[in-house]
Amino acid sequence: MKKYLVFVLAALLIFGLGSVALAAEDSDTVTVTVNSIETLVVPGTTTVTLEAVDTVDPTKYAQATATDDGGLEYSHNSATSKKITASAAAGGSNATNDITLTVAIGTETAGTIVSGGEGQSDIELWTGITAGSYTEDLAWTANATFATTLAGSYIFTVTFTSADVT
Image (cartoon, rainbow, N blue to C red; front, side, top):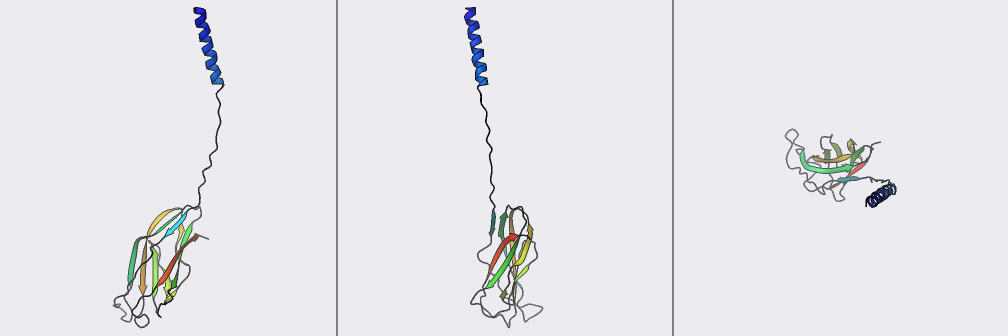
């Protein structure tokens, strides 16, 4: 019986070590691709109403303001800093006017996007934007004179554009 027990133990050791020797190993290289992401969202409409006389210069409207709280949402994941510009185009049916329209993004300096009733192009509003997600207020101001800007609605399409800082 002892011989049988020794034989069984020896067989177990041999098969046990044999299966360890038969183990295999391999590796897999995983590539994670990160696509470029850039999104820019602004409100579809904003209204600024000139409705009072300027207390210093009674030939002008008092400056009107409007704020789109959190109105600009911008995200990008580029290694290159970005900037946002704006261009304005006057509506085809706008009457003669001398409206000045400005917009500021967050705490950045306001840019004049309409001057003398004429839309301006590629006005730089925010530069040096590093990768990340941002939600900023849009602060609008409008000015005009009574003699040139009569009562009515004046429409300007403002297009915001992001680009690499060059």
